[in-house]
Every structure is written in C-alpha cells, then in structure tokens.
Image 1 (cartoon, one colour):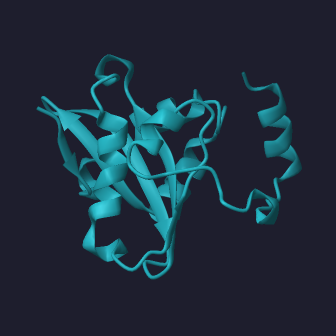
Image 2 (tube, one colour; image 1 turned 90 degrees about the vertical axis):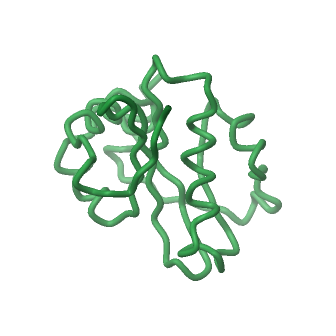
Length: 143
C-alpha cells in the first residue's frame, strides 16, 4: 500500500532532487533551487515500506489559482495510478476548495491528467510565459 503525506519532515530532499535533476522539465536543477521551490510550495510525498516513491507540489494563492508541479513517480511504482492519485489529493484538499483554475504542463502524461478533469487550455492564445535564458537553453537541448 502506498501512503500519501504532506508532512515535510518525511520528504527525502536528496531523492527528490535526483528525480527532478533527471527530468525533462528541470534538467540539471541545483539542489538549492529544489529546496527553495519546495519551501514555497505545498509538497506531497508518496511512501511505501518507509521509502519515498513519489512526489508532487502545488504553488497556489489557495483562493483562485493553483499550479501543479514536479509530479514524479519512481520507475518501479509507475503504472499503478500514483501520479493521478498525487494530483487528485490536491484537487480534493479543502485548502483548494475555492480554486477556479488548476494548471500544469506535461510533455507525456496528458492521458493521466485528462482522467481527472484536465484539458488543453480553452484559450491557449492568451497564455504566455517568460523563461530565463539559461532555462530556455536547457529546455532546448533536453530530450
């Protein structure tokens, strides 16, 4: 059985950093940046047999908007619905009951998130982003 918990004391920051540094969305991210991101977010871990096997975080004003980020499921735990379960935990959390828009970005898990109500933006022409030059360069070379 996999347990979900937002107890920060249980988070394995070293493991989370390793996962995120190997991801396509934050390749090579420094541990200090992961720690800052976690400090400003509501973090959730997934655990089995005392070992962390998943992670997700939300950045939110807890009133109208929430951004889901860094959803990661360790390879041996994939294919069991854990990614969807991590995100669903936030969608169902009472702190986010008034949130009108949850957003996220994915390159390869659209089906996972569509299954819990996410869809392509209704008005994508209104969305904009500003990337730091360093981050844009990393994304251009990431697989």
